[in-house]
Image (cartoon, rainbow, N blue to C red; front, top):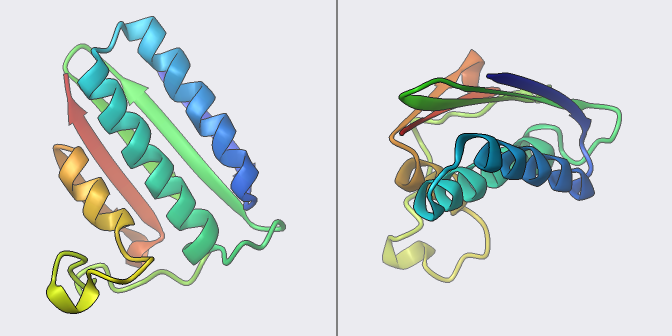
Length: 131
């Protein structure tokens, strides 16, 4: 199964991602733990793309591709931003960052997925969830 969606960079469009993940969960009968991990990590990835990548510019788009087979789910998120240095992201669990409101999205994506990759200078994230 493969699904692709292109959304404008508006926070309210996160609902579309949630809808697709819900459909995926029903279709593949995902357990609650996998469903929760996929949902939260996907929403974080798309929120990052909308907010940080595309800077909430509704004329820019976020593309999401979800593919599922018998042993894994792959979620690729691409924005139209300038990218970022994904090798130099502050650790949100470090004492100096605990109070920060932002900065937990990539940490959550790493913790909840089995594999996380960044491509195209950080404009593309790829998460793998093993089934």
